[in-house]
Image 1 (tube, helix red, strand yellow):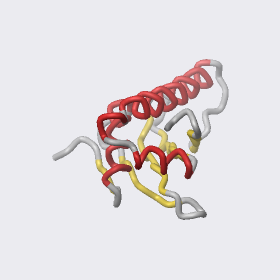
Image 2 (image 1 turned 90 degrees about the vertical axis):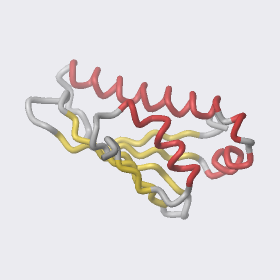
Image 3 (image 1 turned 135 degrees about the vertical axis):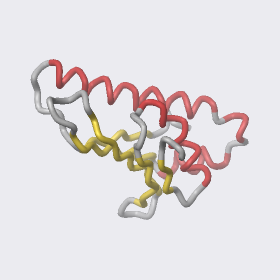
Length: 121
């Protein structure tokens, strides 16, 4: 059995989900879901153990600007490494911010969004 669950229609979206999967605990779900304009997003569902005394269901949405996603899709696979690094850095930073909020006794939101634009591709 695989430690992570991927529910992605597009291979490119699943590829992006796999780039960030090891940042999350096992049993995390990565779901491709279109936004209101039909642009695919990655929605990550996981149970966080480190933001309180009890487990919390969390949701992180990775929203990539349509133009940046189109540029990414047009790239040959061998040139996608920079986009992977940007995606990973932004998700890592977001998770770090959640940990800092918890450490500062602030309320950690259960739903967060990472928005990527021109820096992505």
